[in-house]
Amino acid sequence: METALENKNLIEKLNNPETTDSLERLLDRLPGIVEKVDKLDQLLTTVEAVLEDESAMEKLKMKIDHTNIDVNTLETGLHLLEKLPFLLHATEKFEHVALFMEEVTKDEKSMRYLIEQAEGHLQPLKERISTSKQVWETIKIDAEKNRRQITLFTVMKWMKEPQVQRVLSYVQAFINAVPNKEKRKED
Image 1 (cartoon, rainbow, N blue to C red):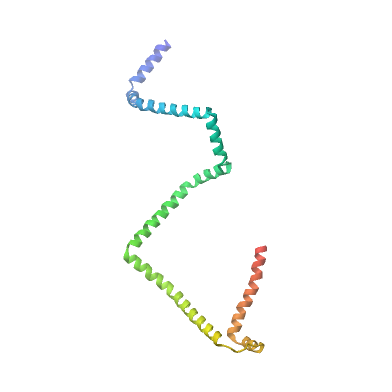
Image 2 (image 1 turned 180 degrees about the vertical axis):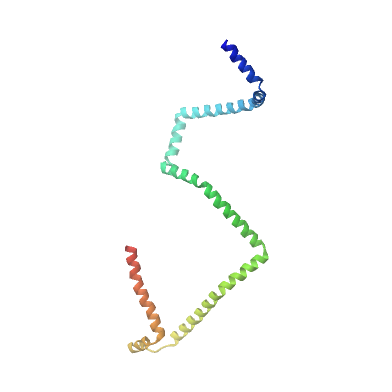
């Protein structure tokens, strides 16, 4: 009696429209499923053959032994995989910046504006460099022309000059700062 009831439940399930649709879809896809199962079977057969082949396994073992893949490498790889979402986000941001920069470089008005701004910031630096070059050239010419002998008294006279005092204060500050840096490195 139980079998008749079970058969009746089975027939009711088979007559259910959802079950019928599912079975029809399964039957339609069955050739593709069988093909994939056959490919999986071929792959497993090949893997089994390689695992049973001692020379192939020996070659594989030698290749693995000559790589630097160890537990640390695998852990690092997994850690890198964990970072992939962040790296993807950063790469996308960089890509947006690169595309923006590409568009800016194509736009003549934007490039002209950037160049003008850069020149505005570089002009004071150019002036300082030019002034420094002129001062250096003057110093060099004066030093080459000067044939006088420098005595201890001349140096003592220079010591009273405000510019010399200023330079010497910088030298003193430098001398005081250097040992402090050395001590900080030791600590």
